[in-house]
Length: 436
Image (cartoon, rainbow, N blue to C red):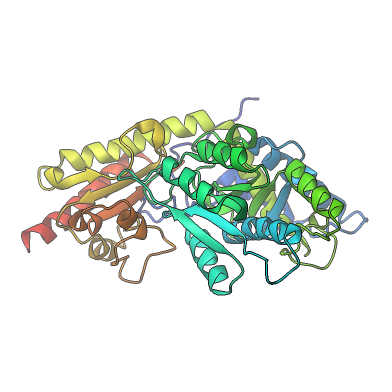
């Protein structure tokens, strides 16, 4: 029997009076994901590490979910290459840690000559990368440099190449998000990966695909990366579950090389230690319920990819068209990010309304419109009054930066919701402009 898609179908969990355009912050849990999880709340409660009848369904469910994630990422070996984690932040932090640990394990043991590992990232990364790098730099465990972006928010490949040349032998990791969570700009991950590997194949290349997974094509081999972060609550699964792809061939080759040089190495040292869960990589009794949810969400993302992209692009474009068509604010509306549609996420609209305070607008509309004035992780209680670091890195004019809204549509967005959102934005924005 053919599966029925729930694209553009309103959900019961939505507040009827409030339009949800904050899918990049988090998604609702999809109905099919809820259905898949339900038996593991009501019936299957066993510990998957046990061998009895209560444990088997849980163990099998984890294997099924791992295979679904493996297939969606184009990984070769799910059991060895997919590690379930608690969130995207953990996955990002651990990818950087693994690269640094491998570098330190192969470095000189002489404190006088030892150098710190160097990480290259971009100026528009998620705080899970940028804040962590700064914390580790302050602790004198690594150094890092950031590649600037152009006015469309895309990382500068030539600047990256110069940084590779400058820090050459010290570079242990390159981490670049596949798509920006605020502007939707798709980053040149493959170009970064190819340059890094040509410079030194020992460099671990990581991409945070939290926002891009399910929205743009994602395949580990096609991107030439060694590590990928995906996050459950961005794709219709619950919060509190994520996965980290770690290329087994890269880690095993690096580990063998280090051991052959007479050094000890544990590439998973930074993960939790204890039991042998996750193939000995990350200890702790598995979060079966959420792992099942992530696996199902990955299956949906894989199966619905083309339809999802088409639907969200149509909703995003309709949203911008209606804002531009407004007789009250249309001439003040500008889209941020890449002009080339192929270089931005299909669901994300970073839109500036000149002369408007986006933070104040969102506070006033909080019961009618759910959206952001930047990344949700950056936003403050006033709706995000400070200018986004991403927009600053793009050198966006201040009057536009302060008036920027991040509007993100999703699987269940409808045309009716788009119209209501535009009416609400128009009413408050025009009043702000008139009162200046």
